[in-house]
Length: 291
Ligand code: SD4
Image 1 (spheres, rainbow, N blue to C red):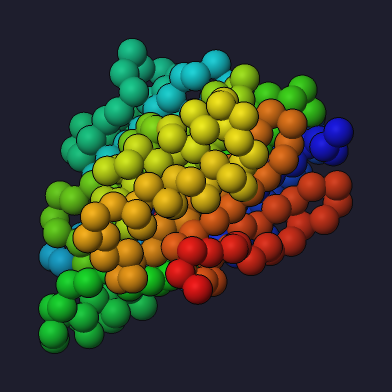
Image 2: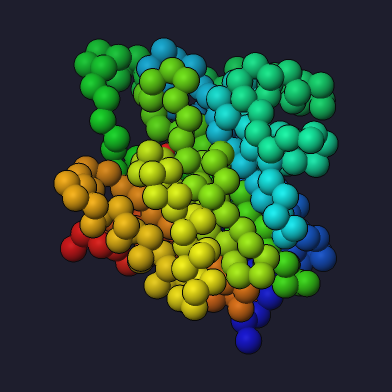
């Protein structure tokens, strides 16, 4: 039997999983744990694909996407949110305090401000400089593993055995203005079914959306696959498409089932999962397709 509580997250984010575990160990629920874990990376200006310090779109605007899902199948999301660091917390408020699932753009920002979030400039000097350098050539192509250790998807199981998940990002660097990725789309960037398990995605969101990746992983687990097998099959759906140009982009999934078994898989090398369980908070290199 797996030792609970446990938390997993995309990439190398030991501070974030430590925060989530602190909440869980204190008897907190999985929902609060994933929110507070994700907030660590949102506030980390060095992480250039989430929250404050995220890389902007082509026009220099930092726009955030996030979502959260609880044990009862409730969810909340924000897309194209500007000027508010903690997108995941705004998504949680959408879930808890509105009749809706998703708020976008200026409406999402106004809602956040009405709930007491302070607007601030999310474009840091470092990200502005990176964007100015990018503008010289203005070449748009997804860069494999650029997100490296910051865009964050997190899944937790609390002491009661209940599962929740969250996902937050500034999206692809130098995306077109208005572009929304997979991270705030329930079923794509994140899906949780408390009877079965949960999954979160990272990488080129367009490919995750096209295959409804996280929902697919959870449904495969429902059919009896382990989290590892389910992640591998979901990556298979992307790379085995006719004319798939998977060599040019990365997608990674992490998943957990109700038993507390975990798995992760990606298209390319150097994707990793951070896992905190039974006192050990460690980065685990993910197996991958393109060998
Ligand atoms: C997106 N999936 O917007 C996100 C990007 C990402 O690490 O995961 N970056 O497509």
